[in-house]
Length: 193
Image (cartoon, rainbow, N blue to C red; front, top):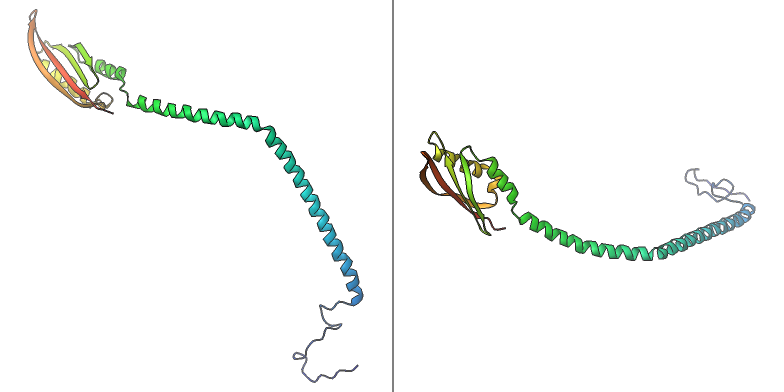
């Protein structure tokens, strides 16, 4: 059949014939259907195999999980006991943080003790600290020794941190064997934690 088309070639409607890039002859189409069905069947077999493998892995992991049940229970018991012990430990740490380290304070007292000064009594109660001592100086500098000793204690942060105040009490002079001795006392109130 002869077709006459007077339109220019760019305006002509292309027919699905031999010149069309998407045109497939009927005899090739018959071969394409079994190929598509074969690909779908292969895909189905592949997915079935993947599902079977995943199911077997799930079964193995489930059996391992069930075998570990006694260990999980022991671990849960340990965790609960550890939580109780941890709470006890926190309470003990809080109590330790609130305590006053008297050995450190007594060490600071002895290290800061000037020559010619000695202690006669140290009393510690729940809220108070009391120290009584004496000082002797051949240069008659008893008061300056007491003041420097007290200033050193007040400047020592490790010593003074647990006190609200530390004050010099009474100072009394007496003579023993021709030497003048000054008896002094310190008192301090302890900080409540």
